[in-house]
Length: 301
Image (cartoon, rainbow, N blue to C red; front, side, top):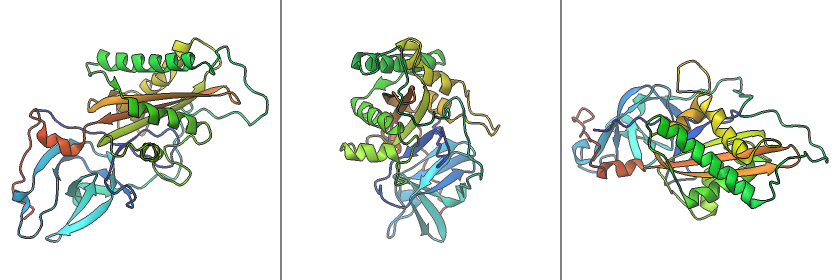
């Protein structure tokens, strides 16, 4: 039996936040950020309708860490009990608590260094980043180093996904003028790019890591690996109030695919890395023979 442990991060408005989101079929629905209280939660594919009870609805149980972040797109009552919709699934609202962002922003000087002041003078780089071969080699170095970190930890490597690759490259270009997981309208930037490319709901479980760092000196390989070094330096999740989300995304076993984008800004001399992850849709877990699903005991009735 596989224990499904999904780390979800949404630090909206905070610099260098690692984010994992679950795509919803209602992409334009109002989304509110909640956190799991911890322990096992029962996920339902649907809420009972008509004369149905929860015994007629397929469900599975998954373990969630206290503090895991999720998007809730809808809250609905069934027999006076409130349920929250997360992606395509429902869970008791009582297992969640509303996310209350801290007043002070979280900044990580390694992943979000302060940009240089705007100037007409361009930075001088030892590498010609207008050469697509250098960009492609940097992306390959990122991919190789990321999978090296995963396999050394006993985690399966990721496979490059062409569609995620297109999304990540477009996102890396956007980061030069807007270093954020949200676009200028406050929407999920990666999701908006995916929709614009016609790639709606590619993966049920998705994540994004972004980084900005100097790309003026060093080898193409070392610059390509730099973003992953920064993410890995955070280490595994600890309840210490520090940022660990990038590392968690890098090493999450439920991700199977990845896309990597790299762009260079000649005005600042900085490189912008975007890594977009994709994994199984939660609704597909029911067809996985390696996962044990537990029918509800009827306590919700």
